[in-house]
Image 1 (cartoon, one colour):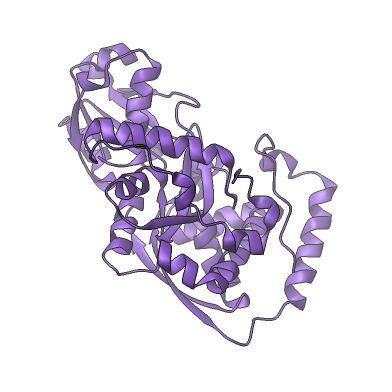
Image 2 (cartoon, rainbow, N blue to C red; image 1 turned 45 degrees about the horizontal axis):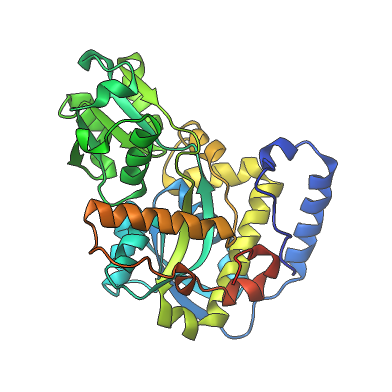
Length: 342
């Protein structure tokens, strides 16, 4: 079965649900699946996987049996968020991890031999800063000097920095309180922090629980977040066939999302133990697509500059992040998905 052509970033697939072309694509996809047969040799992989919508394609591929159809035996190791998944990979507990780009860049700057196999999701307007109205915070400028809960060393903290810069505020004027994603909403509810920076579905949970008691601040396009599949460079080089099959399975999952978005959303909500209503904001904000885009290199360098300034890694010359992108498997699975100049 051939891989689907690369989708355009400007195209919102949910706006195409009513087009007849999708019905044709759905029919051909079903026929292609019935004709496919799993390879005789099964490849084994383990993935540290966050219980988060950003890793949706991996969750869907596991639930729908796409890994098995591609001749893979995949062990999923559940994690709370991407930074925790990356930590599991680095301590040798998993072959691969799904995580946002920020913690990966920090570990690369520290010398970790990591490479990215592909992006599996992207978003530019998913994160937000949520503040308590009773602390007299009605605008971004009134965040200065306040205690803000955030998971340090993650895309949440990087977004918070980008948010402050976008609003011409000194990021160092905040008092950052390091909290795991599972503790953010309760900290905001109890008042131990004045505000939080959160991604979905934590953001939706806070907005639902606290309603008019909080105000939500966004910064569209301040941070183009990428969620990626990462592994040790040596492992990715040695297991090219397993990775090719894995990416084909994720392309199968992407096609499933395009052809039957309602069923895909329902399935993902079940995997994440969320209601479809709780998943909906993330579902609308995320592009669940497999690719390696040129723009990703720019984001990696921007994050690296921030991470060094923040003290997460020693000051050093900007790394060549091109050396930390592994194109081999995605090129073999679907060459058009790789747009990085190299």
